[in-house]
Image 1 (cartoon, rainbow, N blue to C red):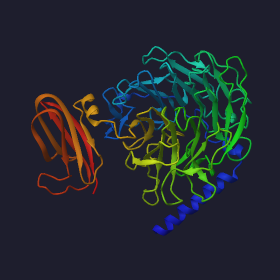
Image 2: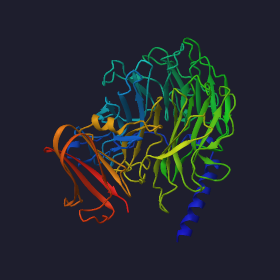
Image 3: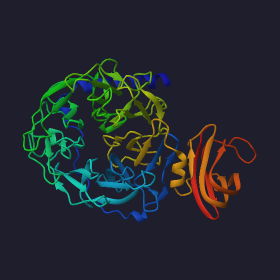
Image 4: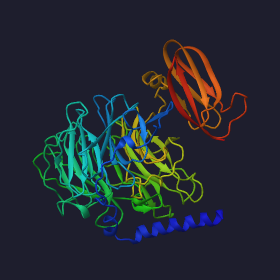
Length: 566
């Protein structure tokens, strides 16, 4: 039976690749568009059940659930996906994440959800949605050099609006019309050049509001947007970025021929000039971005990413492209492929595969890339290589390069396995993209998973060098109660912090509320770490499953969930 299932998966993968190559560009371009297909129905969220939010704290990364209620709990029955992130460069503790918000998974009507953090992502506030009761999709967020936030949102008419926060607060200004179309992406120039602060966006010409154009620009702080322009080769399903000269790069699937392309403009930064495209370069990724795969039936396997090295170091001026693609040469349904240009995008070196799995049947999907100011390249992707046969269970992997992509370090597993097919909001997909921004110390990721039993939005801060500092997190949070690793197989650490000498108790319970083990009872002052090996009071190893640990500090209690793996 196992052989038959594996053989079937191979046949499916080969079919996907042949389908990807056989279908015309126009057929693919017209897939996966966003339109209202269910009416808006108000939802009384007070009637929806609650469960504990899922948060993870480790020395190398921490993950915080974003779409939570006012008490920090998970809302059962709603869904969020397709997240995008913006971080204030003048105050990195100030973070905003936007996503497609489904108030009820039984209704495919979606709105512009958002949440913000004022403490570096340790906790988030979810105030609700922008423009309540109106259809909005495809959120894209970015920030400018002064710390202003921008939220590009697609309406059901394929028009886009840009919302702004320019006062350093958390309230959005009224929307500004920005033309647009399906699968739009936006970037703000932060180069310090004459184009600094310009807002650029492009989208899929098959669903444009200003045919044949699919590109617009704002040069006045996103107060107005210029008439649409045509992009050479009409790329789609990609992103755009400026370098430190203010030169603009776009990447996407070639809309006028085979393969993937990069398009460059060196005059987009010049206010008052019509944007010209200097050249179109074919990028060999040994494959194509595509959609309708087993892992994400109604969505993309991921979009194409482009970024530039603005470090002033050895890689300064390099242009990088990355995407999860169906491979031409080996039939793999989704590998994360990377290509580098050292001549300003005029040519690209042969691609390399980022993921390290040894088979050609698993999916490495939602590949996402960002480049830090110091030139470090950060990459994340979902990986099914360790999934049970017949499933597409996925885990999040992070890796990074500090030598311009020559070598890749620390393939860090960020999440346990989860089933991406649960919690679909009447639409069989987990969105089309994740989003990541990088600074010199951390990668900041907005993503979604189903670890809490439904589609939820998460923020993860990743420390490539392991400098995150769990002690700092512990002091910042309520008692700093963190459990890592979790789930665990052999040993886990329970850490907490108290400011004064107080009576403290730590107890393990099973899911029926029975006391399994009392780990500690006594006075504490400062940061304390307890190790637990998954045994009960009798010293015997517990059965694998879910348990709860309760921290009681003089009557004030904090409870965490622990998963024991056997």
